[in-house]
Length: 167
Image (cartoon, rainbow, N blue to C red; front, side, top):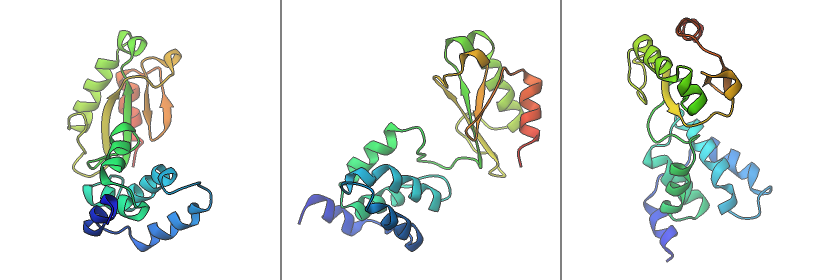
């Protein structure tokens, strides 16, 4: 038996709804390996916004791939999370223009206002934040992305208002 199949026999299974969503995509991709990214997005959705080992192994099983190959994809892309994240994911740009214009202060404000450290989730599950090398919006420095939406230029007060507006 091949290594992926042996590993898969020990792996968890994707929930039925996730398998159905993946099956609907199969005809659009040339092979199972090409489905890794959409399969991980589907699994992450079904596991509450993150990918525990069980979810990664389930994707490997479903696509008949070695779990190490799927782990490699998960660890490469920032959009996949191996630990819980908040309902609102905040990324603070820390590249040079943002750093020069106050990114560190923005991170400090987030830490104080949310009362958690970077890469931690607020007790109510509402928010988590991380620094991010570059969000490609230097003209907005300092800036951050909240749930895919760019905000900037930021001040500490603007950050507080943004946080107050999140459910």
